[in-house]
Length: 439
Image (cartoon, rainbow, N blue to C red):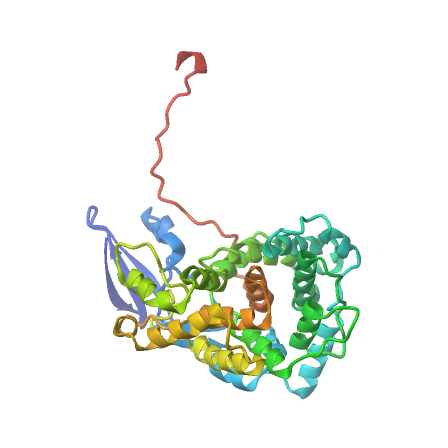
C-alpha cells in the first residue's frame, strides 16, 4: 500500500492505495495543538480489511490527551503547557498534582484546600498493617506495593464507582495521599522497624521522609535540602505521557476496573528494568564497575558493538537530546551531595567520574548519550539512604498522580473504548485433532 496526502473539502487527509486491487481509501488527519499530526484509522479494517502492524505501538496514538506533551528531539517536556524546568524550579509537588488533576494551577485558596484534603487522607486503614505481615521480610518492596495498592479497593468501597465524578476524585486524592504511607510501610517492614504514622503538620515530602527514616524512640530531624530534593524528584517523575505503565493503567481502566486495581497494574508494569527499574539498574552497573580505575574499560565495552554491556542511565528512548529533567536533577544532585558532605562513597565517586567522561567524550556527545534522569536520581536516592530496592517504589509514588490524572481523563472521554490490540497471526492454520493413541 502507498500513501499520499491530499486535501479534501479543506481538510487534510491521507489516501491509502492497495497496489493489488487499485482501490484507494481516504482517511482524515487529526491535528493536535502541538506535535505530529495523526491519521485517524479507526475505520481502517472496516473499509480495507487490513489492520496495522506496530510492535510496541511506537507509531500509534492510542488516545487524545491534554495532560503531558513531549518533544524528544528538542528535549521538551510540558505538563498542561508548563515546561518541566519551570515547575521544578518554582512550584512544589502538591501544586503539580493539582495541575495534573484539574488542568490549571491553583490559586492560594484552592491549593490550601487541596493540600488539606491530601493531608487528611494520608492514614491507611489499620487492618492494612496486618496485610503487610503476609509478605516475607525479604520480598521486593514493589511486589508488596502491587498487592497492597490493589487491596485498597477492598477497604474503600465508597470510591470505586467510576461513573461518579465525586467518587473518582475521592479515589484520586486517596491514592496520592496514601502512596507515601504505603511506600514507607513497605520499607519499614523490610528492615523490621515499626511503622511510623503520618503527621498532619508536615508537607508531602517531609511527611514521607519522616515515615521512612523516623523511629518512635526519638524525633526525626528533617533536612530542608533533602526534603526539597525529594519534592523535586516527585515533580520530575509525576507524568511522562503514554509510556508503558501509563498505557497499562489506561488499558486496565478501559475495562471499567476500579482505580486502585488500575494503579496496581501500573505499578506492576513500572517494576520492569526497562521502565521504572532503570535507576536501580544504574546503581547495579556502578557496583559492577567497582572502581574509578575500571571506568575506561567499561567505556570501551559500551562503544563495542559486539559487547552486550550497556551504560545504564545514559541516553533515552524518547529524548534524542538532553533529557530536560536531567538538567534539574543534575543540580539537585550536587546540592544533596554537598549538603551531606559525601566524599568517600566508592559508587558515588564512580558516578561522578562517569558523568564527567560521558559529557566530554566525543563518542557520547556525538550520539547524544547524555546522563538521564535515572542516572542522577539513583545517585541522589543512594546518598539520602534509600536501598536500591526502594528506587522503583519512589518512582511509583511520584507517578501515581500522572496515572490517576490519565485514568480520570480516559474515563471522561466518551470516545474511548475497551482496549483490544490486534495481531499478525503466524501460527498454525486450522487442523484436525488427532487422539493421543494415534500420534
